Image 1 (cartoon, rainbow, N blue to C red):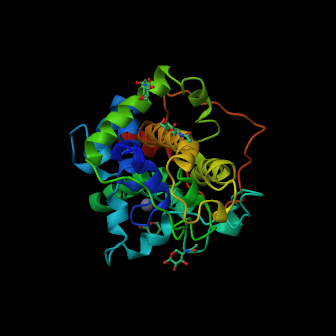
Image 2 (spheres, rainbow, N blue to C red):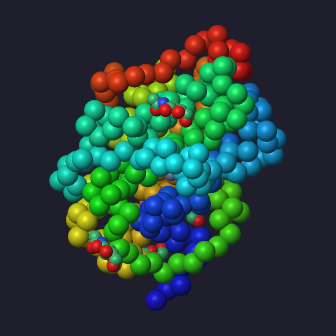
Length: 304
Ligand SMILES: *[C@@H]1O[C@H](CO)[C@@H](O)[C@H](O)[C@H]1NC(C)=O
Ligand SMILES: *[C@@H]1O[C@H](CO)[C@@H](O)[C@H](O)[C@H]1NC(C)=O
Ligand SMILES: *[C@@H]1O[C@H](CO)[C@@H](O)[C@H](O)[C@H]1NC(C)=O
Ligand SMILES: *[C@@H]1O[C@H](CO)[C@@H](O)[C@H](O)[C@H]1NC(C)=O
Ligand SMILES: [Zn+2]
């Protein structure tokens, strides 16, 4: 069997392995680094101030915090906020419905809205503000993982798979992978597609914006992740067929998550983003709102 380098192998492990490894440190850190390559200078300063980190790693370094926090007594409440369990029917039909799928205790969609509101709430102390930002960085990664938007087999966590890979230095790999994805967005294979990645995404209705991301990721469950249902991948060796079929989507979702995170943080920190944003009246109507967050323009100015 071909020995794949751990670096290329990890995204698939992340996608299908245990909850603890879900989407993986590599995926989350890469999303953080991609975002830091696209945020405006003001946004960078704003985020570095909140996180108390003026290094270039300020987003990558906090991208996995929420996956550790959920195992602490203080953070236990947040373990259900990493996903939304879509009660759809893959591979026949894939869809996310906020009222059907997000429980009263919250899900990744309501959490993104909550922490988008909280990071702008000047009445919170610096610890709470910093936690809100770290949650946003992490959850915008999680929501782009197709299996975090799917209930089948508990978000894919119990699907048994093996993979021919091994651990490696995730941190430095995340940076170089992010550099590659950044190039692909700026003037590579995603340069045309990425012009539409921010369509209709706005923090003024953070829940609707997060639903666009969740629906987007969930649509790949039917087309790529489980085209033959759970039985299609249960117990299989993932390399090379499944890996080859899904790596393109996984990579695109990581690039998308990073790009969308950058725009999201820009909008919070400065009320606008210079990244291309289009509005298309015909697509993705906003779901019924249980609650929504509003950006106060005064607040936006105060933090910019
Ligand atoms: C928002 O986040 C705070 C802090 O983590 C949490 O206590 C609160 O329950 C959340 N609210 C909602 C509506 O999710
Ligand atoms: C995966 O393996 C575990 C342990 O052997 C087993 O309990 C579980 O039912 C399996 N999952 C599926 C979907 O078959
Ligand atoms: C990213 O990596 C791929 C595979 O190694 C390569 O084909 C592509 O040209 C790289 N893109 C950029 C923008 O560096
Ligand atoms: C999977 O991808 C690898 C690496 O690009 C390639 O060498 C291999 O032939 C592919 N296998 C299949 C079955 O497509
Ligand atoms: Zn997570």
